Length: 360
Image 1 (cartoon, rainbow, N blue to C red):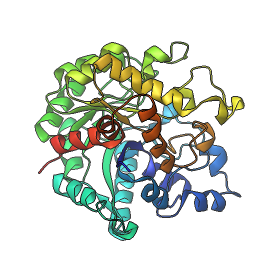
Image 2: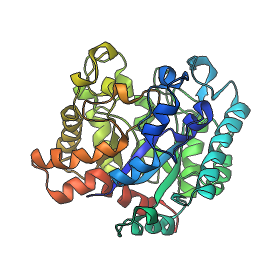
Image 3: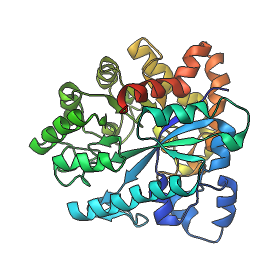
Image 4: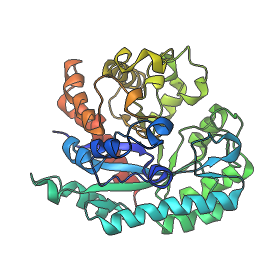
Protein backbone atom coordinates (compact mmCIF):
# COMPACT_ATOMS: atom_id res chain seq x y z
CA UNK A 1 0.00 0.00 0.00
CA UNK A 2 1.46 3.34 -1.04
CA UNK A 3 1.78 6.23 1.39
CA UNK A 4 -0.65 9.09 0.93
CA UNK A 5 0.09 12.78 1.48
CA UNK A 6 -2.97 15.04 1.74
CA UNK A 7 -1.95 18.63 1.07
CA UNK A 8 -4.99 20.41 2.49
CA UNK A 9 -7.12 19.72 5.58
CA UNK A 10 -8.75 22.36 7.81
CA UNK A 11 -8.16 20.51 11.08
CA UNK A 12 -7.57 23.45 13.41
CA UNK A 13 -10.55 25.40 12.09
CA UNK A 14 -12.86 22.44 12.73
CA UNK A 15 -11.40 21.74 16.16
CA UNK A 16 -11.94 25.33 17.28
CA UNK A 17 -15.31 25.91 15.58
CA UNK A 18 -16.97 22.55 16.26
CA UNK A 19 -14.83 20.85 18.90
CA UNK A 20 -13.88 18.01 16.58
CA UNK A 21 -11.33 15.60 18.05
CA UNK A 22 -9.19 14.18 15.28
CA UNK A 23 -7.56 11.62 17.55
CA UNK A 24 -10.84 9.66 17.44
CA UNK A 25 -12.43 7.83 14.54
CA UNK A 26 -14.42 9.80 11.99
CA UNK A 27 -17.26 7.35 12.59
CA UNK A 28 -17.21 8.03 16.33
CA UNK A 29 -17.23 11.78 15.66
CA UNK A 30 -20.26 11.42 13.40
CA UNK A 31 -22.10 9.55 16.12
CA UNK A 32 -21.15 12.13 18.75
CA UNK A 33 -22.34 14.99 16.51
CA UNK A 34 -25.78 13.54 15.76
CA UNK A 35 -27.53 15.98 18.11
CA UNK A 36 -25.32 18.98 17.29
CA UNK A 37 -25.39 21.56 14.52
CA UNK A 38 -21.96 20.62 13.16
CA UNK A 39 -23.19 18.24 10.42
CA UNK A 40 -25.69 20.79 9.14
CA UNK A 41 -23.08 23.54 9.16
CA UNK A 42 -20.05 21.63 7.85
CA UNK A 43 -21.18 18.14 6.84
CA UNK A 44 -20.25 14.84 8.45
CA UNK A 45 -16.52 14.48 9.01
CA UNK A 46 -14.24 12.32 6.87
CA UNK A 47 -11.19 12.54 9.15
CA UNK A 48 -9.73 10.83 12.19
CA UNK A 49 -6.56 9.11 13.35
CA UNK A 50 -7.85 5.54 12.83
CA UNK A 51 -8.75 6.40 9.23
CA UNK A 52 -5.36 8.00 8.61
CA UNK A 53 -3.72 4.79 9.80
CA UNK A 54 -6.08 2.56 7.83
CA UNK A 55 -5.52 4.54 4.65
CA UNK A 56 -1.77 5.03 5.11
CA UNK A 57 -2.20 8.81 5.18
CA UNK A 58 1.28 9.60 6.45
CA UNK A 59 1.45 13.38 6.04
CA UNK A 60 -1.23 16.10 6.15
CA UNK A 61 -0.85 19.80 5.45
CA UNK A 62 -2.92 21.27 8.29
CA UNK A 63 -4.23 24.73 7.54
CA UNK A 64 -4.50 27.96 9.43
CA UNK A 65 -7.74 29.22 7.91
CA UNK A 66 -9.42 32.44 8.98
CA UNK A 67 -11.89 34.21 6.70
CA UNK A 68 -12.41 37.94 6.31
CA UNK A 69 -15.57 39.09 8.08
CA UNK A 70 -16.93 40.56 4.84
CA UNK A 71 -17.24 37.06 3.34
CA UNK A 72 -17.79 34.90 6.41
CA UNK A 73 -20.78 32.57 6.30
CA UNK A 74 -22.95 32.16 9.36
CA UNK A 75 -21.14 28.98 10.36
CA UNK A 76 -17.66 30.48 10.24
CA UNK A 77 -16.48 31.13 13.78
CA UNK A 78 -12.92 32.07 12.89
CA UNK A 79 -13.08 35.37 11.00
CA UNK A 80 -11.40 38.77 11.14
CA UNK A 81 -12.05 42.41 10.41
CA UNK A 82 -8.43 43.62 10.52
CA UNK A 83 -4.85 42.36 10.52
CA UNK A 84 -4.59 42.09 14.30
CA UNK A 85 -7.74 39.95 14.47
CA UNK A 86 -6.40 37.76 11.65
CA UNK A 87 -3.12 37.36 13.54
CA UNK A 88 -4.86 36.32 16.77
CA UNK A 89 -7.22 33.87 15.08
CA UNK A 90 -4.45 32.16 13.11
CA UNK A 91 -2.31 32.05 16.26
CA UNK A 92 -5.06 30.13 18.06
CA UNK A 93 -5.10 27.62 15.24
CA UNK A 94 -1.33 27.20 15.22
CA UNK A 95 -1.46 26.71 18.99
CA UNK A 96 -3.96 23.89 18.36
CA UNK A 97 -1.41 22.03 16.19
CA UNK A 98 1.21 22.46 18.90
CA UNK A 99 -1.18 21.03 21.51
CA UNK A 100 -2.20 18.16 19.26
CA UNK A 101 1.38 17.08 18.62
CA UNK A 102 2.49 17.70 22.23
CA UNK A 103 -0.36 15.67 23.72
CA UNK A 104 -0.71 12.83 21.18
CA UNK A 105 2.45 11.04 20.16
CA UNK A 106 0.99 9.66 16.93
CA UNK A 107 0.75 13.18 15.53
CA UNK A 108 4.10 14.82 14.73
CA UNK A 109 4.52 18.44 13.69
CA UNK A 110 6.90 18.54 10.72
CA UNK A 111 9.27 21.48 10.88
CA UNK A 112 12.21 20.15 8.93
CA UNK A 113 13.49 17.29 6.83
CA UNK A 114 14.51 15.21 9.85
CA UNK A 115 10.93 15.31 11.15
CA UNK A 116 9.63 14.24 7.74
CA UNK A 117 12.02 11.31 7.54
CA UNK A 118 11.12 10.21 11.07
CA UNK A 119 7.44 10.15 10.12
CA UNK A 120 8.09 8.24 6.90
CA UNK A 121 10.30 5.70 8.67
CA UNK A 122 7.52 4.97 11.15
CA UNK A 123 5.46 3.44 8.34
CA UNK A 124 8.07 0.80 7.52
CA UNK A 125 6.73 -1.62 10.12
CA UNK A 126 3.34 -3.27 10.47
CA UNK A 127 2.43 -1.95 13.93
CA UNK A 128 -0.13 0.86 13.70
CA UNK A 129 0.76 2.04 17.19
CA UNK A 130 4.27 2.90 16.01
CA UNK A 131 3.13 4.83 12.95
CA UNK A 132 3.06 8.60 12.98
CA UNK A 133 0.96 11.12 11.06
CA UNK A 134 2.97 14.21 10.18
CA UNK A 135 1.39 17.67 10.18
CA UNK A 136 2.84 20.49 8.07
CA UNK A 137 1.29 23.87 9.05
CA UNK A 138 0.00 25.82 6.03
CA UNK A 139 -1.37 29.37 6.27
CA UNK A 140 -4.30 29.75 3.87
CA UNK A 141 -4.50 33.46 3.11
CA UNK A 142 -1.67 35.70 4.31
CA UNK A 143 -3.58 38.40 6.18
CA UNK A 144 -2.42 37.02 9.58
CA UNK A 145 1.06 38.19 8.57
CA UNK A 146 0.60 41.81 9.65
CA UNK A 147 3.59 43.04 7.68
CA UNK A 148 5.94 41.08 5.43
CA UNK A 149 8.87 40.82 7.83
CA UNK A 150 6.57 39.13 10.36
CA UNK A 151 6.66 36.01 8.16
CA UNK A 152 9.87 35.13 9.99
CA UNK A 153 8.01 34.94 13.31
CA UNK A 154 5.42 32.63 11.84
CA UNK A 155 8.16 30.41 10.46
CA UNK A 156 9.84 30.27 13.88
CA UNK A 157 6.50 29.10 15.31
CA UNK A 158 6.23 26.29 12.76
CA UNK A 159 4.48 27.54 9.62
CA UNK A 160 6.16 26.09 6.55
CA UNK A 161 3.77 27.02 3.72
CA UNK A 162 1.97 30.31 3.07
CA UNK A 163 -0.85 30.99 0.61
CA UNK A 164 -1.26 34.59 -0.48
CA UNK A 165 -5.04 34.57 -0.76
CA UNK A 166 -8.38 32.97 0.00
CA UNK A 167 -10.55 35.82 -1.07
CA UNK A 168 -8.38 38.86 -1.70
CA UNK A 169 -5.89 39.91 0.98
CA UNK A 170 -3.82 43.05 1.26
CA UNK A 171 -1.13 41.06 -0.54
CA UNK A 172 -3.02 39.59 -3.49
CA UNK A 173 -6.21 39.25 -5.45
CA UNK A 174 -8.08 36.05 -4.68
CA UNK A 175 -11.15 33.93 -5.32
CA UNK A 176 -14.14 36.13 -6.12
CA UNK A 177 -12.07 39.30 -5.65
CA UNK A 178 -9.62 39.56 -8.56
CA UNK A 179 -6.65 41.84 -8.59
CA UNK A 180 -2.86 41.96 -8.91
CA UNK A 181 -0.15 41.47 -6.37
CA UNK A 182 0.17 44.56 -4.23
CA UNK A 183 3.48 46.20 -3.41
CA UNK A 184 3.24 44.54 0.01
CA UNK A 185 2.58 41.23 -1.73
CA UNK A 186 5.77 41.56 -3.71
CA UNK A 187 7.67 42.36 -0.53
CA UNK A 188 6.14 39.32 1.17
CA UNK A 189 7.26 37.03 -1.66
CA UNK A 190 10.81 38.33 -1.33
CA UNK A 191 10.79 37.77 2.44
CA UNK A 192 9.32 34.28 2.05
CA UNK A 193 11.93 33.31 -0.52
CA UNK A 194 14.69 34.50 1.76
CA UNK A 195 13.32 32.43 4.64
CA UNK A 196 12.72 29.31 2.56
CA UNK A 197 8.95 29.29 3.07
CA UNK A 198 6.94 27.39 0.45
CA UNK A 199 4.40 29.43 -1.55
CA UNK A 200 0.85 28.07 -2.05
CA UNK A 201 -0.93 29.68 -5.00
CA UNK A 202 -4.34 28.14 -4.33
CA UNK A 203 -7.07 30.81 -4.46
CA UNK A 204 -4.78 33.43 -6.03
CA UNK A 205 -6.39 35.45 -8.81
CA UNK A 206 -5.11 34.81 -12.34
CA UNK A 207 -3.15 38.06 -12.39
CA UNK A 208 -1.57 37.49 -8.98
CA UNK A 209 -0.87 33.82 -9.71
CA UNK A 210 1.01 34.46 -12.93
CA UNK A 211 3.08 37.29 -11.52
CA UNK A 212 3.86 35.36 -8.32
CA UNK A 213 4.94 32.16 -10.05
CA UNK A 214 7.34 34.20 -12.20
CA UNK A 215 8.62 36.35 -9.35
CA UNK A 216 8.98 33.91 -6.47
CA UNK A 217 12.46 32.48 -5.99
CA UNK A 218 11.47 29.43 -3.99
CA UNK A 219 9.29 26.33 -3.98
CA UNK A 220 5.76 26.73 -5.34
CA UNK A 221 2.69 24.53 -4.83
CA UNK A 222 -1.05 24.63 -5.41
CA UNK A 223 -2.34 22.67 -2.43
CA UNK A 224 -5.95 22.26 -3.62
CA UNK A 225 -7.31 23.12 -7.07
CA UNK A 226 -8.63 21.31 -10.13
CA UNK A 227 -8.18 22.03 -13.85
CA UNK A 228 -10.38 24.79 -15.24
CA UNK A 229 -10.63 23.11 -18.64
CA UNK A 230 -12.86 20.37 -17.18
CA UNK A 231 -15.11 22.81 -15.32
CA UNK A 232 -16.12 25.16 -18.11
CA UNK A 233 -19.68 25.61 -16.83
CA UNK A 234 -18.71 26.64 -13.32
CA UNK A 235 -19.86 29.98 -11.96
CA UNK A 236 -16.42 30.77 -10.52
CA UNK A 237 -13.76 29.65 -13.01
CA UNK A 238 -11.10 31.74 -11.23
CA UNK A 239 -11.06 29.15 -8.42
CA UNK A 240 -9.55 26.62 -10.83
CA UNK A 241 -6.33 26.39 -12.85
CA UNK A 242 -6.00 27.25 -16.50
CA UNK A 243 -3.69 25.08 -18.57
CA UNK A 244 -1.19 27.95 -18.59
CA UNK A 245 -1.20 27.98 -14.78
CA UNK A 246 -0.69 24.21 -14.69
CA UNK A 247 2.25 24.52 -17.08
CA UNK A 248 3.83 27.30 -15.01
CA UNK A 249 3.60 25.25 -11.82
CA UNK A 250 5.30 22.35 -13.58
CA UNK A 251 8.03 24.66 -14.88
CA UNK A 252 8.63 25.69 -11.26
CA UNK A 253 8.84 21.99 -10.24
CA UNK A 254 5.72 22.46 -8.12
CA UNK A 255 2.87 20.08 -7.29
CA UNK A 256 -0.89 20.55 -7.68
CA UNK A 257 -3.29 18.86 -5.24
CA UNK A 258 -6.54 17.69 -6.87
CA UNK A 259 -9.72 18.03 -4.79
CA UNK A 260 -12.33 15.23 -4.40
CA UNK A 261 -15.20 17.65 -3.73
CA UNK A 262 -18.20 17.06 -5.98
CA UNK A 263 -18.71 20.71 -6.89
CA UNK A 264 -15.05 20.80 -8.00
CA UNK A 265 -15.46 17.63 -10.05
CA UNK A 266 -18.74 18.29 -11.88
CA UNK A 267 -19.68 21.91 -12.51
CA UNK A 268 -23.41 21.19 -12.61
CA UNK A 269 -23.53 18.97 -9.53
CA UNK A 270 -25.94 19.99 -6.77
CA UNK A 271 -26.42 18.39 -3.33
CA UNK A 272 -29.86 17.19 -4.43
CA UNK A 273 -28.10 15.01 -7.03
CA UNK A 274 -26.55 12.94 -4.23
CA UNK A 275 -23.14 11.33 -3.88
CA UNK A 276 -23.78 8.69 -6.52
CA UNK A 277 -23.83 11.31 -9.30
CA UNK A 278 -20.05 11.84 -8.98
CA UNK A 279 -17.42 9.12 -8.79
CA UNK A 280 -13.69 8.84 -8.36
CA UNK A 281 -13.60 8.54 -12.13
CA UNK A 282 -14.22 12.29 -12.21
CA UNK A 283 -11.18 12.79 -9.98
CA UNK A 284 -9.09 10.57 -12.26
CA UNK A 285 -10.10 12.83 -15.15
CA UNK A 286 -8.61 15.77 -13.24
CA UNK A 287 -5.40 13.85 -12.62
CA UNK A 288 -5.23 12.76 -16.26
CA UNK A 289 -5.63 16.33 -17.47
CA UNK A 290 -2.75 17.63 -15.38
CA UNK A 291 -0.57 14.75 -16.53
CA UNK A 292 -1.45 15.42 -20.16
CA UNK A 293 -0.78 19.17 -19.91
CA UNK A 294 2.58 18.66 -18.21
CA UNK A 295 3.56 15.46 -20.00
CA UNK A 296 4.30 13.77 -16.70
CA UNK A 297 2.81 12.35 -13.50
CA UNK A 298 5.41 14.31 -11.51
CA UNK A 299 3.35 17.43 -10.82
CA UNK A 300 0.05 16.17 -9.40
CA UNK A 301 -0.94 14.94 -5.95
CA UNK A 302 -3.89 15.03 -3.58
CA UNK A 303 -5.25 18.04 -1.69
CA UNK A 304 -8.59 16.85 -0.38
CA UNK A 305 -9.83 19.94 1.49
CA UNK A 306 -11.83 17.41 3.55
CA UNK A 307 -13.91 18.99 6.32
CA UNK A 308 -13.27 22.32 4.59
CA UNK A 309 -16.86 23.56 4.43
CA UNK A 310 -18.23 20.22 3.22
CA UNK A 311 -18.55 16.68 4.51
CA UNK A 312 -18.90 13.13 3.27
CA UNK A 313 -22.25 13.94 1.63
CA UNK A 314 -20.49 16.08 -0.99
CA UNK A 315 -17.68 13.71 -1.93
CA UNK A 316 -17.61 11.04 -4.65
CA UNK A 317 -19.67 7.88 -4.33
CA UNK A 318 -16.74 5.69 -3.28
CA UNK A 319 -15.58 7.99 -0.47
CA UNK A 320 -16.75 7.50 3.10
CA UNK A 321 -13.59 8.57 4.95
CA UNK A 322 -10.10 9.75 4.10
CA UNK A 323 -8.97 6.09 4.13
CA UNK A 324 -10.87 5.59 0.87
CA UNK A 325 -8.32 7.69 -0.99
CA UNK A 326 -6.40 4.39 -1.21
CA UNK A 327 -8.99 3.25 -3.76
CA UNK A 328 -7.20 5.50 -6.22
CA UNK A 329 -4.33 3.00 -6.36
CA UNK A 330 -6.28 0.33 -8.26
CA UNK A 331 -8.27 2.87 -10.27
CA UNK A 332 -5.14 4.64 -11.51
CA UNK A 333 -3.55 1.33 -12.48
CA UNK A 334 -6.72 0.38 -14.34
CA UNK A 335 -6.25 3.56 -16.38
CA UNK A 336 -2.75 2.50 -17.31
CA UNK A 337 -0.63 4.30 -14.74
CA UNK A 338 2.51 2.46 -13.67
CA UNK A 339 3.11 1.60 -10.03
CA UNK A 340 5.85 4.28 -9.68
CA UNK A 341 3.49 6.88 -11.15
CA UNK A 342 0.71 5.84 -8.77
CA UNK A 343 3.10 6.13 -5.83
CA UNK A 344 4.11 9.59 -7.07
CA UNK A 345 0.52 10.82 -7.36
CA UNK A 346 -0.60 9.44 -4.01
CA UNK A 347 2.29 10.86 -2.02
CA UNK A 348 5.80 10.78 -3.41
CA UNK A 349 5.47 13.99 -5.43
CA UNK A 350 4.60 15.88 -2.24
CA UNK A 351 7.33 14.08 -0.31
CA UNK A 352 9.90 15.08 -2.91
CA UNK A 353 8.79 18.69 -2.74
CA UNK A 354 8.98 18.70 1.06
CA UNK A 355 12.47 17.23 0.92
CA UNK A 356 13.49 20.16 -1.28
CA UNK A 357 11.51 22.82 0.55
CA UNK A 358 11.79 22.08 4.26
CA UNK A 359 14.73 23.35 6.28
CA UNK A 360 17.42 20.87 7.30
